[in-house]
Image: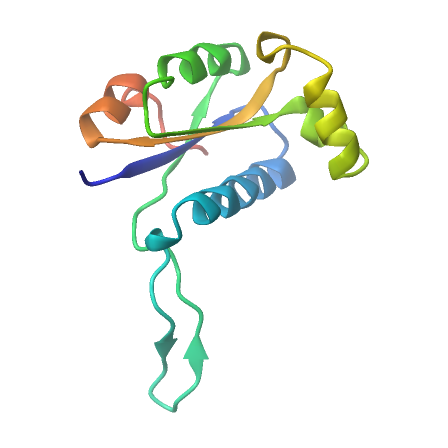
Length: 133
């Protein structure tokens, strides 16, 4: 199966967070699927550039109130990641994990999602969403 990943952000986030959250989500995807990172590539003069993603990773926008439903619809996809509000509010990773553990999943508010699966499945979930502007 060809994997189609997409990132979906709360479209009302400030510009800095719109830039930061996809980077965080992409790091998680790279950890889960290192095969999606290409080989290092030498330049014509022998400098080696680190490998980059081998798949497109579009960033889409959605109203904040739709993100929990999108996350739920993606339950059967092979990859479903969420950047919860608790991550933004936490002082460090230990604080983040404590905040996440203190509440059930339904109590957390996602600000960004990364879902991946077959093109058909991903398009069915978020095909109507526009590219983030």
